[in-house]
Image 1: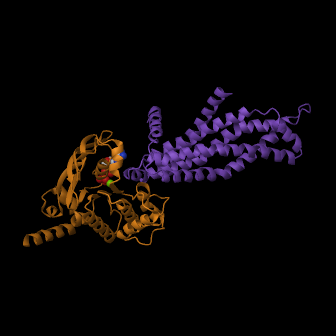
Image 2 (image 1 turned 30 degrees about the vertical axis):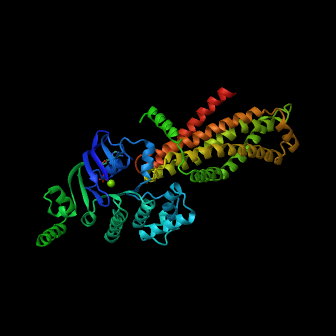
Image 3 (image 1 turned 90 degrees about the vertical axis):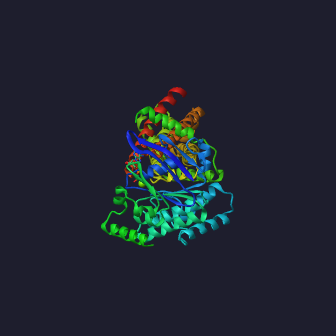
Length: 257
Length: 245
Ligand SMILES: Nc1ncnc2c1ncn2[C@@H]1O[C@H](COP(=O)(O)OP(=O)(O)O)[C@@H](O)[C@H]1O
Ligand SMILES: [Mg+2]
């Protein structure tokens, strides 16, 4: 579990995160949602220490991350996997080497065992046979999947994904969502996903934090969203008339049961 | 950002480089890779420049010495001393600042902008140790070797041209080379080479590592790093000459 309290982050005099607190639960897909520019990426980067929050506390499984020494943070980070918005694959390495890199760095496994593990995770993300390709030869969706494979290769306890399905077609996007939520359940990870994709919210939102202009506006799960009275949230999630209809439909269905 | 913040951040980057490698084998691999990038990668340009630099200084020395009372052995001595003292270390390093410096700055800048540096950090790896240290170490090992090569080639280049054009005979040239030779000059040149190697690698690494913004910034910081390294090389050249000569 990752808990954070009263996070404040400013860039110059621009207030990006304004007193945000929340708990991210283990074994669940925790979503941070909001329009672009609402502070999702900054919040995630604060949680992993790529940005230092100006105020507030971050707690990983009961240990304060905020007060941890740089050495302890390095150790903790070996249990963190992160998928970046642009995938952040190493350009100079093939798919296989990208995924193998954390194994090379942190394990004493034999080459053969490493390759076995690499193929295991590549299979998990549906990328068999692309081992020797380079990032420049991959489509956006494939890059994301390699990014996920690299993030989970060491069986992390915490998985962070920044917009895992931005720029993907709806079908690939669903596959990736499903993949992440399956992995989360199977390995009992604490997964935190930034998204503004309405499909992901409805399909995999176990625990949702809705940010608006850097403030916590609403929390709940995907079922709560349908019945939520929050105007901003409704406008954000059910932006089109089509989606408004879908929401009404779901509400009626839910009441009938 | 002002001058002093840059200096402070530069020094902090250098300090941050020294941490225990998570897996020495991978760091060694990266170091060897950089040695080949930096050393082998700039071999061609060093060979061409050194040869012509020696040739031109020999021809010009011959052109200026019209007085028949001055011995022809002065020509190889002029070639030898200018090549060893100034051309091989300084000129070559200024060229390398362009070749190697822009490569280091743009490679790191690209890794910063595309979040590859953040990705390393999240894995629990110190990106300064993994990315910056091997580049500086490789430069400090390889660049002085390139400078030695350049000295030899410059002197050979001078010999080939003046002998071929019949200005000086091969024996006179070789005799002149060993006359009045000061080994201290080579030591001085090597001190310069080590200093410049450090500048050529660490300054572009700094500019690349701290790129801020998009891909446009990568080009800008790579240009800036070359300009700053060239100026620093000339300043260091002057300081070393004042101190050691
Ligand atoms: N490194 C930075 N320096 C200054 N401002 C930043 C930086 N990163 C993000 N911001 C600002 O913080 C706000 C939130 O950005 P971000 O978290 O990336 O939004 P998103 O919710 O789309 O991920 C934006 O207004 C952005 O301009
Ligand atoms: Mg974002």
